[in-house]
Length: 342
Image (cartoon, rainbow, N blue to C red; front, side):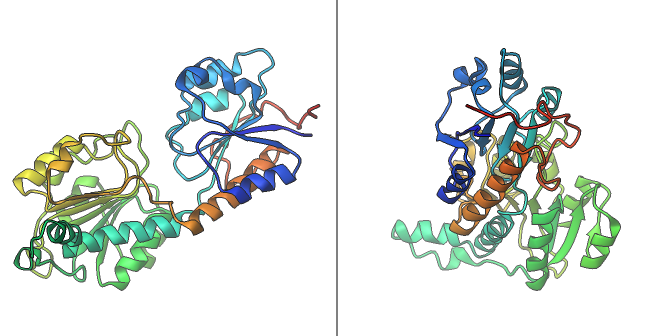
């Protein structure tokens, strides 16, 4: 039952070894957009990707329409699957699995690091020292305790960050229409009926939503202008936003304007609408801090992601993907049972 697995965006060595030990052929190889569009994936039983490889409807249809196409599993080593057209995958009978549990701690710690760096102007201070400037008077920050932290999306990562923020003394505010009220009540959080309501209430915002047509550029200049700038304890701390979720939710041009006119005190992004971000207008602001999509980039997270996704892949190739890892649960798998490979 040897099958062919292609890994296009990198994967922990232990995960590759686990799949090889199960008797499968595993190849690390990047595919160009042209190769994907031409249906190159038809020669593989499974593809494992991260965020770089884009499996659009056209790519999936080109793969599925090739005579003898073998592709049965698309595996996303990570949480977000906005780079996979799920509808096209389901229509083609291709299972999509991900690893939703593995990177939670790492993303939470990065988001917290950005929140703390914003509050204490650590990045700004560091830049000054490197330029020979002693910016002691300019680097008066604020405490996170007593401030309202608004969550746009309150799933696994949001809740984990919420527990840490609450321990620091922050007040938790949430917009998540899909979340049971019991979860909100257990946190002692304030639930809001709309995204603008959260922005009106909070000086600090953290984004944990998926990118969709509904969330694209949801956080724009007008939304940012709703933020109060003054905390419940009376501290004039300004407004601060962190996004370690998905690029494209924040309108970067509008955010740059808000940074320029002072409506936004600071912005921290680990994800961008276009990656690499290139000559973004955000880079013109001293109050912008960024990281190159490294939320899951820790030794521990990479090992966990590899172990989780390799386990999901092996199960899926055997026709029984774990329900916690199967994303397109409506799929009718193309192959009911694995076929032996010569």
